[in-house]
Length: 276
Length: 183
Image (cartoon, rainbow over all chains, first blue to last red; front, top):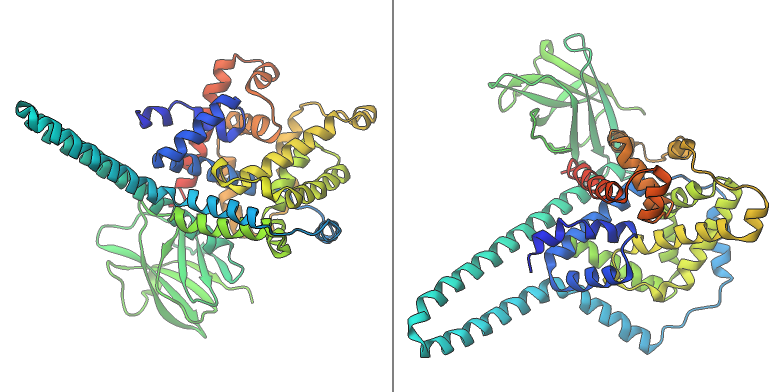
């Protein structure tokens, strides 16, 4: 089946939006349990909608949580039965299907290839075709695997970034432009516990080829190098820079590419204090 | 690592299904705003919406066994419960009597002003979402949030069914692209 065509048909979108018919739902669920790439795409769509819903969320009133927990306490207790546990184990097995399916597909493909090879050995004139087919299938498997890995990596990066910015230990510091570039701005995310630091470039002029922006952590007036970062069309949402053990403020200067040992104060573009 | 995320969700689901209260508390802490966003956009009376939110969490708690991982993520399941509960309320006799009938006016789409996003770091993302084409936000709101079928949406928005279908596809593509900005 051409999974690329299926994925671009729009049916997965209907499924996650809740408008697919019962038959279509079953088809999607079936295909996503067979084809990892369909399942991946479904997961990405669901995750996108889920994040959208989070962003569009509305906070309920303060006291509501206690009311909800009280209502739940009042519900009849739950018993874990052996049957339920068995059910759960089935679910866990289903989750392994991503890897299991690959193994299964690889094993099935191998068996198939062996069978075909044996049969065709009898018809020797087709051996060259079989070898070519084998290579073709292997290429497709590799390609799909590569795509799957890419998707997984992308999702992992998204989740990491979301974790960083929503972590309560993360201090977000707004850096504003100096006279050199009054309209400039960027954000520094600094995790006070892990000391990890990230830069989110917002508005900074692109530097000349031989120069680079450098972040400095300022403590008691002393600047400490926090690493360099990029400003171009391809920058990631967050860039991980050096760890910062302590700071009262942050500043960004334009230095030679690779950074300098001490800041060129006449090339300071951004500055921001940490709110105490 | 979709696998790692699945394991987290797996564990959460097991604990929920076993009756571990910390699991439902975790769900409330992390998802009540998202679910309330759905409910409140259908039921614009805040008290009614909050009562329904309570019902929804009790329902999630009581029906946890019904969630099956092969049908998608836990949030999708919870969002369906939230949406359906709110829609059921609008169909109830008492609701119809009280003449709090919701008509689809544009104010509903701007309810985001109500949200006091307690996580300031997400505000940047919210701005990006605002840059989505209004007609794409609209189609997500009317179908995903309000639970209209595509045919109902076509009627309400006075456009052909084909346009609705393609708009849904494009809207989700745009959403996906938005998420990839986070890479």
